[in-house]
Structure formats: structure tokens, C-alpha cells
Amino acid sequence: MSDLLPTDSIVPEHVAVIMDGNGRWARERGKARHSGHRAGVKSVRATVEHAALRGIQHLTLFAFSSENWSRPAAEVGALMALFVEALRREVAELHRNNVRLEFVGNRASLGAALIRKIEASEARTADNDGLHLIIAIAYGGRWDIAGAARKLAKRAVDGDIHVDDIDEQMLGKDMQFAGVPDPDLLIRTGGEQRISNFLLWNLAYAELWFCDTLWPDFDETEFDRALDFFARRQRRFGQTGDQQEVAEC
Ligand code: FPP
Image (tube, rainbow, N blue to C red; front, side, top):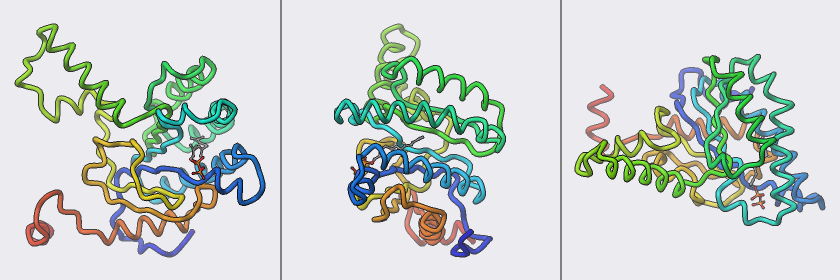
């Protein structure tokens, strides 16, 4: 384990990760893109273990976006097969480690075999009270917001709610992450500095950490660098720094 973090440092409750750079990692080695995704599974395992060790309560991984459907069919097929295989291989170990697994995203757009694996792994780990691991597959931030708006509109049309009563809390309750605290820290690997339609609603006050490391090379030391950055941030939530210092006294 890296000794980058003092043991009493502030740990984020919820960390979200955009795992980018698998394709470039493979290309640098003269391999096909899917071998980068396969190598990425190892980093997923290391990241999950390290998150649990550091006492992080919720870890959300962006595995496949709404927009990733437009990649070449062979890559999409390889990724979907990889998700099924990873669940088949990893869920028993996750369960042994008390991890609660959940999936967000447009489940209806996925294949039957993957849906079955998702449902089985959620059911098997539902009572675990260790790390809450959320995997976003076929997920898009705009899709999530539009879905919540649609549900509220239907309830208003049905007369269950009044339009004037709609507020941020009500919308949030109809979104995929209802009941989960907003991410405190977003990590994006692979050198790009953008959100790519990830948790548009939920990242409002997240601290953002970007690193050049390609996802298959992301390890505990790199994770600790991000946690160290987080521990040094003063979070203001719209207030002034002085107000925060008074509140911290
Ligand atoms: C982005 O890299 C990565 C993905 C779209 C797939 C992420 C999937 C995994 C890490 C596989 C395992 C996941 C789970 C949850 C078991 P990219 O292909 O866009 O890389 P590039 O920018 O270098 O082309």
C-alpha cells in the first residue's frame, strides 16, 4: 500500500471514475482495442479493493456511456461480452468482501445475458453493507435527467403532484442515483479534461481530478494521489472561504 496519505486524512464518501485510455494503452502495445479493455478489468479490481481499504463508501465506475453504442459493432460486442465474463468471474469474490453491487443506466438496451447477470449479482449482494459499488452501463447524464423529467411530467398529468411543487429534491428522487450522496470526487484517467455526459446532475460540487495515466495503468498509488488532492481541498458549496473556516472551528 502506498504511504502517500496520512492515516487521519479526509476520505471522500463517494468517488466516481471515468475510466479512459484503454484503447490507447492497447495501441501503444500494438494490440487490438479490446485487449486494452481486458487489461482495464485488472484496474477495476485494484480500484475496488483500494476503495474498500480506504473506507470509501460509494464507488461509481463509468463502464459504458449512452454514446458508446456508436463505436464499431465489434468493439461494442467485445465490451458487452467482457462485462458478462467479468461478472461471472468476480461476483463471488465481491460478495465475500461484503461489496454491494448495483448498476445504473438504460438496462432495457442491454442484451438478455448481461441483464440476467446484472440482476443476479444485484440480488446476491443486496444485503452486503460494505463498499457500495455502482457500475454505469449504457448510462448518460442527459438520459438520466430526461427520464426523471418524464416521470415527473407523467405524475403531474395524472394529478399526483402539482407542477409548482416540482423542485430539485423531487427531480433528484426520480433519478438513477436517488438515495446515494453526490460524488465528492471525480477521477478521470487518460488525459482528457471533460465530463463526457457522466453524472451531470450529481457532480455539481465534486472536486475534479484528471490524470494522464491510461486506465489499465491506474493503480493504488495513482488512486492515493487523487485522494491526497481531495484531502487538501477546501469545499465551499457556494459559500465563501471565510464562512467555511468559521464552520470548521
Ligand atoms: C474508455 O477507454 C473505456 C471504456 C469505454 C470501457 C471501460 C471498460 C472497462 C474498463 C472494462 C471493465 C469494466 C467493468 C466494470 C468490468 P477508451 O476505449 O475510450 O480509450 P481511448 O480513449 O484510449 O480510446
